[in-house]
Length: 637
Ligand code: F6R
Image (cartoon, rainbow, N blue to C red; front, side):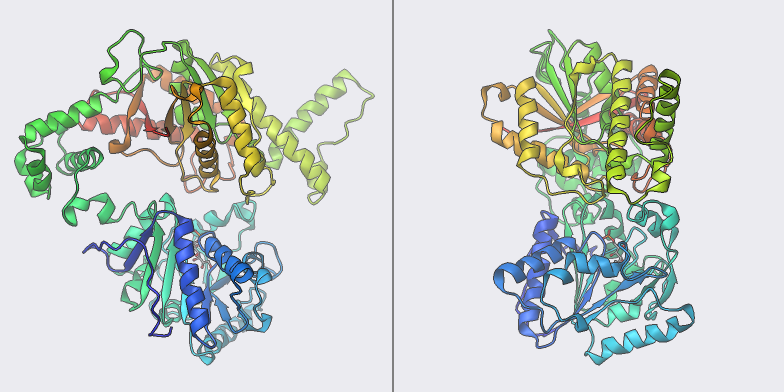
């Protein structure tokens, strides 16, 4: 890149001695993407024939969107730009929908004025005996344009960059590789199942990437936090290929605050420098210390605090270690309650929820038609048992997460039922329809309808089991979800209006919503944003002034101890009841399509997560419960 460029990537400026790669943290993926697009635009304007190295995957989509915006609205021209893509699946047709050729056309090339002759993407159609020659020519082609000025990267769960999987050599060049099983699993959603994911890919090598004059790696979301920590703070190791970037002279990681969660600056800031001690940070530090020295809170000593870099916390507390321990213990103790809707006629000052009104109207928002029971099935049951008026709003139909086999099973059941009832009546669709007509849009639509119906009936079964009146279930079918594909529509006013309408109708004292933003396809995040946007609009209405919002987390993530503001313990029989409620969601039991990085069934994951939270409380010195569901309050007024 032009060394005289004046562009400075904004973002966090603090530095941590643990970080071996320049890392800029942005509030959101959108803000980070904007900064990177701006850097690219500056480069395009400055250099005569800029050479960009491009990546695919979810991470760069926001950057491409911004670049397209700049082209359409600000006249940014790509006429002189040369691009080289990092990789392509091998054995896939360039015009297949899952190919990286198609991805690049869809997200960037179709919308800008780039000269098609200047686009280079590895060709996954090349015959195996010509691959080697083809790859070395790809390298030469990059060199012939003077090398890559700016290389954009994402990072995989295996710490791969490009498709340089663990074990890749520092000197590796463009070549054919075998995909790591984890990478194939991550791609399964795009290919409608693991079986169709290619086993091989052509990728630029580590040395090809390292030759770029500037490297920008993008990572968004909790699920990248661990791999970012490995790449930025651990030793260079070929098992974590992204660590090689520590040797690059001009490499920046652009990440959002969620992806920065495991960096020392966030995880253990007291080891990095001086801290501003608010209550959350105090709790975080003390629970960390307790884990480090394997002692419950009330046994922590001044020496423990001092030896583990927390003398500053003690000094600022202006009391003894024991006083600080008691403070922390009480804080945690007061989060625990078996009365998630508030305990009637009790002193509420030391409880997470208000005592009055003793019978509350409760609205549980569930992004998919099973998050309610997976994430807070125990609390859900308690709220019903304790006499509150509980409503559940299923925000999306969840239809794409039901397999065709499941649809077929239900059609067969209804076919056999129908044939026994009205022998001469023919069904419009028969059980072969999925197999015989995979591309028929009308049938696909019918199939999606059946899938949604399957999920609805599962919710009804679970509600009946928990003694919730069926009339209190609200199937919102928010339109942003209804694409029939993994990629969803942008949420819009209709989604918000439907949400406002429901809140207005119920006038809840409590709203529970999914604050679990790590689901693999981003639906939870969109669902939460819709709720936030709706609440913003109606927060001043009289019926909202008594409404509290509690966030739960689900199958993918749990709140940290310092975040938990309400901890609802479950007895062994309540754990069993929750498991049985989850098992009503039979279509999600086996071969779940979009379950992310954990292959276990949801009930098992939920149970383990709740037991882990209980163990954490117990290790800190609090009572030993079978399981705990955890919530954080979100103030929106
Ligand atoms: C894509 C590529 C990969 C991805 C990585 C992260 O061209 O080379 O290294 O960047 O797998 O993928 P996402 O961004 O989907 O998490």
